[in-house]
Image (cartoon, rainbow, N blue to C red; front, side):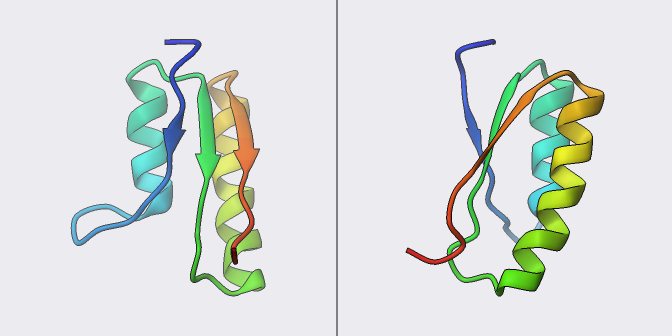
Length: 68
């Protein structure tokens, strides 16, 4: 799954971090953090958690702007 990218999202069942972790556990090696409506502080807070997960799974993280 090296060429498959997981783009984060949240829903009623999973938040951004949980979704990213499930994708990483499934073998995904490329995660994009996308949080269109997040404040800068929330984006940075969650981004740090997702980045740490990516490092632990030896995966790449891409960042999308929190506002487009």
